[in-house]
Image 1 (spheres, rainbow, N blue to C red):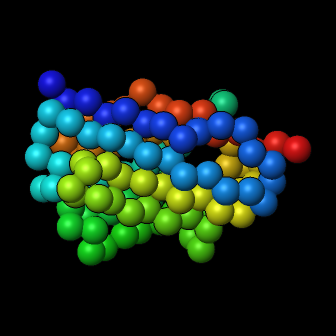
Image 2: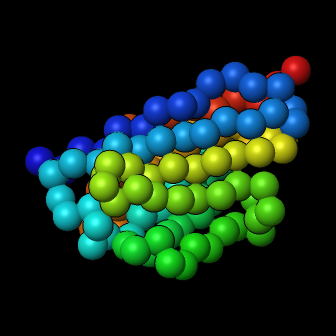
Length: 113
């Protein structure tokens, strides 16, 4: 069955960096666009970044543009989210999403001093 397993979350100080990973299985990863979403407490889930199946096109929310980078490795069936210059407002649960309707379980990112 389809599985998306996120990892790499944690506690980081403002200005720090984290790299999230999402390992995919159970579907043709190399043919599937992928996205990262996040949901902060009391807020709706929002789209953070997306990447096409080949990795040739990426898109970002204005709030993370220039700080976050989405990438993928179709040999490892993994999508990544490199997050730099983290801010307290980036604190959220981050979810991996496969554009076939499948979600990961989420990984907590907390930005705090």
